[in-house]
Image 1 (tube, each protein chain N blue to C red):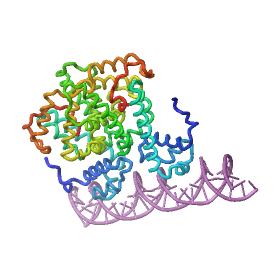
Image 2 (cartoon, chains in turn brown, cyan, yellow, purple):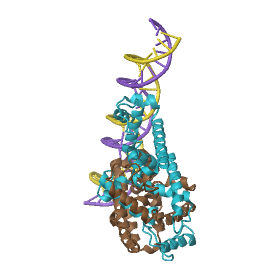
Image 3 (tube, each protein chain N blue to C red):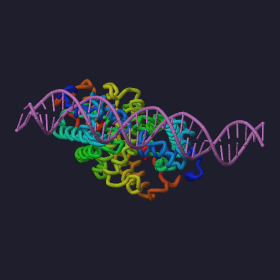
Image 4 (cartoon, rainbow over the protein chains, first blue to last red):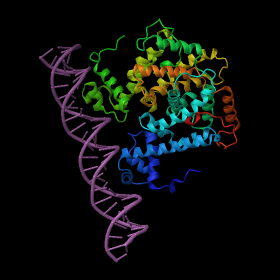
Length: 225
Length: 225
DNA sequence: CACATCGCTACACACATGTGCAGCAAACAA
DNA sequence: TTGTTTGCTGCACATGTGTGTAGCGATGTG
């Protein structure tokens, strides 16, 4: 269960892990083969020997990440009793890489896997809703996954806004409590939602005619787009 | 009101706009001075002449973005009647740059401005809640802003998941309708929320003891971290 | 022993890129 | 006129970086 000692890993695995760390830290473009080699304690030539090119190294990292996420998803399905935070801590070392990969357009398989998993939970949750949502569960799962991923992707900004380092246990507690609060309160009332829906249906998407519509006071829609 | 003709802009402004486009498209590291100069229709030397260095050019872009956002925020405060989608379309050309800047750790001022604006709306919304949240509004505003920013930051993945291009009016409609659905339904029931809160309080943050806790069936907490 | 394979190092090359700099034409001032 | 500033171009330089390749020791393997 414990993380294997880095000394025990093969050089290839050490290079891959170093690459994920460096890619996550500096981004793909700024991370260098030599920097990765140094972090892994090998020569730069060995990186090329094992992976061929920087792009191939990146793809190997993506594949490894996908494998990890698949395993965690499988665990989450099989043993939901371990609690929601076990996967979170397991992913922590790869979180920065995941965030970078997602924002650079890669890691599509990882995102899609998360959507699928989220969707399976979504349908369960829908049954408990008094006013069931009308949108396709897959669509809601996609957006919900993206919104959930905002936390790792924008963690530095969140930490700054909260005034605590959310990678520390104390900050993580604050963050999780706030998330529970957010997830357990609707942001929009049913009447406001209906107004916005009407505005969306009524006016053809493009020109927002000033002063005519119901002018829904939606706090979020300016950030949305 | 209409966007000024690119021909009318000074070369300096054209360079800045081209830089924001290139930075947004390729990221800061991969975007090149020469590419920016070509996109702006000037020589690469002029870029240096006006901005001194690539880093200074980036800072000028950030400053310009901050200025734009501040103006939009001011509009949103003064004329809430123009509807929620006017700012969205105004930001569209700069959205990719914003997303890049945020994930690369820059654009802090922009994020913090959004949090402040969101907070001011948060307190209004809280008054209408039947069960008011217990978390600090600033904290919820921070996380809410981050989650809202997930849409532009992860737009490519969302479009793929939805099967439509969400930059097109059709896809945007689908996205907005789903957002209204999500924002108007609580994700967690009050009982589930209480369970998670208890779990968060009861066990000291770190070791999740398998099988002991109430095992809240939270679909999102695995993506969160 | 002879030979092949594998993991690995060291070094060199080609190239892209940020930066520095000289200079040119036009506008403007003295 | 003459000098100066401004906006702008073109080119050369140093450097960092991905990539190619030769070679070395250890480990099997016939």
